[in-house]
Image 1 (tube, rainbow, N blue to C red):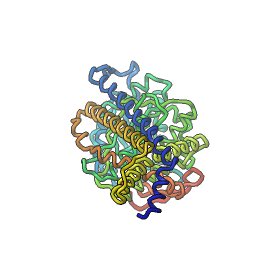
Image 2 (image 1 turned 180 degrees about the vertical axis):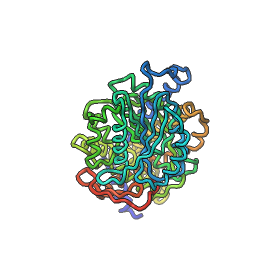
Image 3 (image 1 turned 90 degrees about the horizontal axis):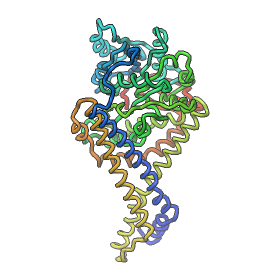
Image 4 (image 1 turned 90 degrees about the vertical axis):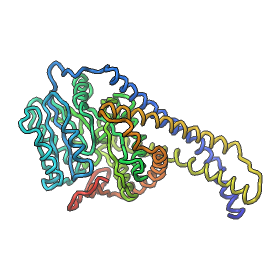
Amino acid sequence: MNNVDLSLAKSVLDSWVVLILQCHSIVPMILIGTLWYLAAAARRREIRALTTKARRNGRPPDKGFPKVTILLPTRGFRRYSAENWKSILNFRYDGPLCYVFVVEDMNDPSVSIINELSETFDGSRSKSAKIVCAGRARHSSQKIHNLMCGIKHCIKSSRDAQNEYIMCMDDDVQPHSTFLEDLIYDLDSMPDMRVATAYPFDIPPTRDASIFSYATLAYHLPLSVGLAIHTKTRFVWGGCMAFRLEDMIDDRLGILSSWSKGGYSDDLTVAAQMGKLGLQIYCPASAVFPQWLPETMTFRQYWNYLRRQLFVLDTYSDAHNKHTNYALVCLLIYGSVGFVAPAVTIPLRFGLYVFEVFTYSSRLFIPQAWALSAGLFCIGVVYMGVALAQMIAETATLISILHGSDRAAITSKLSFFRIAVGFWFAQLVSPVCLAYTLLMPHIVWTGVSYVRKQGKVSVVSHSAAPCDRY
């Protein structure tokens, strides 16, 4: 590096623009760290309630538990599918319970496994399971198409819509046995709550899982706090959504009509509709679902997964939904720049200082401005790290209590170094992937190709066989 290049690099890294970016990084770091602290506190309160038995004693409402239909859009069969389905089929619930697995066609690999698992319900009056064939989606995501087909099936078979619920769940989650009973009990006592949800907690299969698996975990960490701080929220997780059947019959929330208009994202559409109506969503701290990540994930798989996550931000059903999604785009860019800019420029500037000392035998001189920005960045990193460690520890404890498992079995699978690397990698890649995704109008999800136009799915193309989720 000659003197001209060195001077140019120093002038750029010492500019007031870079300095402002470096110092401002403390804002998003303190913000996300505080949210993680609040999430940890909410889970700590739930743990205290569980350990002191300060919860209901399992008695059903005076009128008895209402009928619940669990809809599971299913495609293919993966490593943890059977284990996840068993946990869902083994819900402890004292009311009528119907499981509806919705598949694209009856040749799906999951059908034989579902039939085998459902044999345990033979002769049961309160539990039943069936498979519904939805066919191929044409103008929406396959998941939304399956959900709408399942909901129509529930409406047709309904006997008392005012006292029935629909629970839409992904087939790759692992809820605890009392989750459904607890949630329906709460919903039944809160008539103003029309929608309920849960939140996931990603767990890699091993501590040494792929760094791209950890990047997936880290990508979800800032997103999950919106669901885990307070029981009443504005966010929805598509892995678990509970609705009152009466709201679906006349579509009084506008969810079905929004889904049918070229819908791609089920949860963001629901959240936007609820926000439009000024309604909150119920999400108790105990509604946490362990979600297993793949052990070996390639960059190509991670890139495709991240594109699918960001693709939803340019799909919308109306102007309100559009503005909500674009606000999330701005927030994502703000956070990524705030996290990545100082993480790149501060070490580079320090490297130049060291280079000057060893190359030109000059005296090491660190300007106060750089020291200030570096100090703020380090404070922010430590604050975030401690907050994240607390949230993970409280979540692991909560899961171990709810599932009756060993807490160490969860924490031993997590490497905080890999989480940190995955976090900054995800923040670095996300803006690039977002720009590419906004420019490219098509995406592939489990073997189905979607093309969007003006915020809606316009073309759907299906492959011959289902592909892996990632």
